[in-house]
Length: 106
Image (cartoon, rainbow, N blue to C red):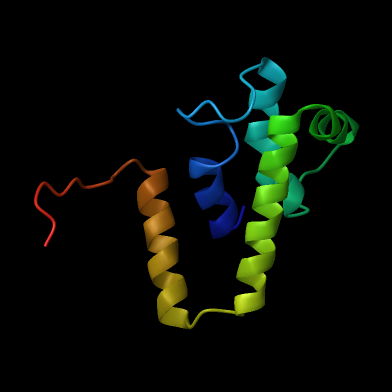
């Protein structure tokens, strides 16, 4: 799983507190694999996934938004090595639940 997929899975599909996206078990299942599917990294039968994206407006919208985001990012080109390293460390930090809270940002 690449850094973008890991980052997006933390904040994207799987539905957040705003209630966007469905809350059904099928919607949660889609949320768990959507980024892998969009990245072409999902192995196995995708018919259930594509059927759900066609039938569920919320999950279909999530899919479309993530695809637009991926397309926009890809048009920017590759970031330099330092930027990639910082982003990878940030994604690793978030995935580990090690987020520091700053009470008084400067």
